Image (cartoon, rainbow, N blue to C red; front, side, top):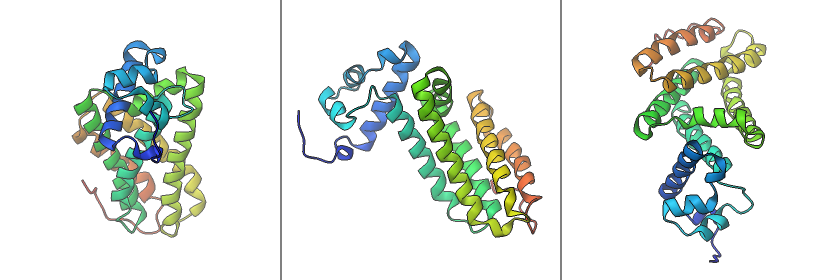
Length: 211
C-alpha cells in the first residue's frame, strides 16, 4: 500500500486514539513484544501497511502513543489556562484541568495512561528516554507560564524551585487518581498546594479556589 498523503493525514484522529489505546492494552496485558505494529493493526482492524507508513522507523507504537497522549493532555490543559491573566489562576487551572482529564480517562477507559507511561519508562531504557523527554517538555510548559507572569512574583528567581514544586504536584495528582481518589478530595489538596505560590506573589490573589 502506498500513498502520497502527508503521513499525519493517513489515519483520522479518532481511529488513531483507538490504535494507541489498543497498543497500551496489549502492552499491559502481554508485554511490549506483543504490542507490535502488526498486532495492533490486526486488533484495530486497520491495514498494517498504513500503520507502517504512518509510523515509519518506529519499533512499535508505544513511543508514539506516549507522545500522542502527552500532546493531547498538554493541548487540553493549555487551552483553558491560557485564558487567565495572572499566575495564580493560570497554574490553578493547569492543576485542576489535569486532574479532571486524568479522572475522566481512568473512569472511562479503566486505565490512567499517564501513570502507565511513567511505569513503562522506569522498566524499559529506550522508553525511559522517551518518558524523560516528555517530562522535560511538561516542565518547560510550566516554566513558560511562570515566566509569562514573573512580574506577579516577589522573587522571579524562585521560578526554578516553583517548576520543581509544580512537577511534584502534577505527579501527586497522577497517583491520587490512580488510586481512585475522588475529585472532591483532590481539589482541596490543590487549594493547599496553591498556598505555596500565593505566599510568593507580590499581592494576594484573594481566590479561595476556582472550582
